[in-house]
Length: 157
Image (tube, rainbow, N blue to C red):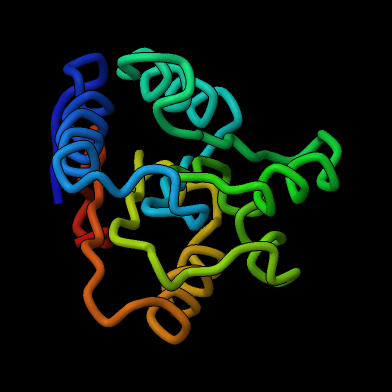
């Protein structure tokens, strides 16, 4: 669990080490998501995706898919089936894709909850619990769960 002020670089703080580890281990391009990052809003999900894209050494180094509601789920499904290395999105849309069995958890190594306090405040507790339980049930035994937040109220701990 990491807590720091808004604008302090928390996004880069989890994106850069994750990307560097995947580079070192040469695991990009396997077709299955290696990391799933949950965000409370479309805007934050897009921001995280842009940060991940900015870390690429070249445009096709790895695939990042950003999913959120209000756009065509079928285009997202198609992209998932073509192969994604890092999956970023809002809890509701990620849950939709999970329930539709649109991706395979077997290669997942990281589950990141960004702005966890905001997700809880917005009422996404049940969705987060469902997502994490599904990962625990259908994913690999070894997965690192990371939680980043500007504030950590006692109920989040």
